[in-house]
Length: 195
Figure (spheres, one colour):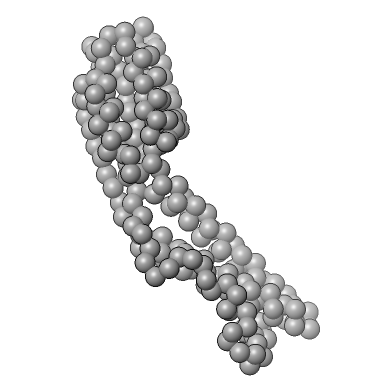
C-alpha cells in the first residue's frame, strides 16, 4: 500500500539535513579501488612416493602467503594417493603462489582466470546505503503512524526493505571474500597414475 508514502510527506518539511545527513559518510570515497576475483586450477604430477610431502608443502605455501587450505580431499586406493587441495591466498600473492606450486612437480594442466567485479561491488554498496536511508525514514514514519492500517502498511514495507538489505549485505560479504582471497584448486597425483 501507498499509505506509508503519505505519512512520509510531513518529514520533508523538516529539512534535508535531518535524518539523511547522519549516515551519509560511508567512507567509500569517490573512487573504489578495483575489486578482482582471481581463481585457478592446476593439475600437478609429483614423483612416486612424494605425495604426502607435496601436500604438506602446499599447506605451507598457503599459510606462508597469508592464506590457508580451505578444502582437502585425498584418497589412497591401491597405494595410489591422489586428491585435490584448495588454497585460499591473498589476491596479490596469487601469481607467486602459482609459480611456487609449479616447482613441486610437473604441471599437466593449468587454468587461471580473473573477473573484475568493481562495478557490481559499487552498485551493491550504493543500494545498501539507499536501503539503510529508506529504513531510517520508514522507522521515523512508523513512530508517527496512528491508525492500524497505516502501522501495518509501514511495517510491511519495513520488512521488505530489511529483507532486501540483508540479501545485499550477504552478497557484499561474498564479494569481499572473493576479492580479498583468491582460490587455487590443486589436483595432486603421483607419476604413472591416470588423471
